[in-house]
Image 1 (cartoon, rainbow, N blue to C red):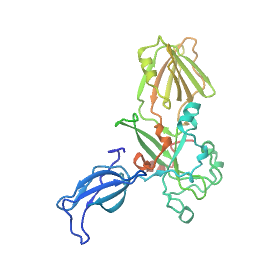
Image 2 (cartoon, rainbow, N blue to C red):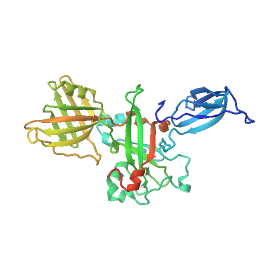
Image 3 (cartoon, rainbow, N blue to C red):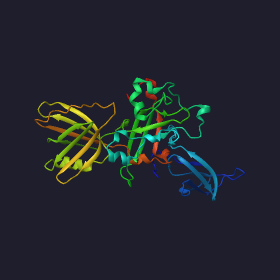
Length: 354
């Protein structure tokens, strides 16, 4: 369990049936789990019957006193955030989704998408409607949303919200790490795929907002670059600089790379963004393969500066979405935070032009 990331204590007073406070009562907080309840914290009430747990993430918790369950709590770590849920397959087109390992091996990372749900399955959409206002138009016919519609497989029955949401997610640097990185999506619309489905928010490479790059290197040599079908390869000979070799050895599939390519002769520079789908560390050479990033917010060019007189490449690596995101669990509320992007609403400007 991720602790102390958007966490808040559970607190209260313990009393008996007559309303008298219970001092020195043992309060046990458990979290229901498929394999049985998990003890999260054990605290003792003070002279006023007051208890306060350690900070714990959003979720459902049971409070026990003297081995008796006294309460079940829907705990919200951040009162300003929107509680979110694992998306139900009834509420999105799961036939369009592939697992991350398949995408990584096939080189189709630009098609990566997953969803989190911001409406509880208990909501009766047919009777009460969706929680948030939605566009009451066929968005598949909207010229400004055509590429988005195609990407998500939206139909004439699909709708998106008029509001925009910011999504933040903390993921461990490694599987067993206690140090986390922050990933953020800004101004995303929620999607309803059918007349009676709940709203879900897409998570995908098109919408990723990278934070500061985790490593940067300038390669003062003439790598071999090729651009074909939206892909680019860059090979580095063994005679390259130690800094470049160190950079390439740290790369991992799924990272977002920016290549700032500058011609030595003409001084012309272009920026090219891609998603790393292969790293070949064959002895004597390092070859990386990039698939062009589809985000329309990024300045891109299919014209690469002439290599006749060589060019330098400055490489920036950004964290891609955590790979475990493809296996979103019931604990999604403790891993993701969703808030309304009020700035985007007030300005009536979308963060993205799909």
